[in-house]
Length: 66
Image 1 (cartoon, rainbow, N blue to C red):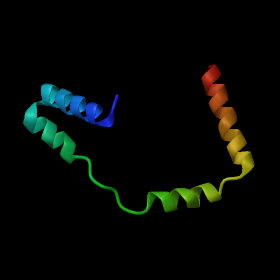
Image 2: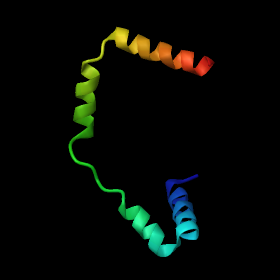
Image 3: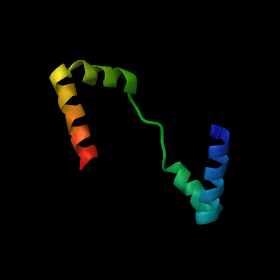
């Protein structure tokens, strides 16, 4: 399904559930953030070690097997 189709269906569902005014109010709640996500994410990831990564993967595997 194309992104345009997903958007069209999403808007239609919002309008059906909330009406035009409610859908508009819902959509206005989403604002553009501030800062540089990519730069901040790279800074966070630079601090991770291989041991951190291994521990993360192990936790995910354990959670999946529960």
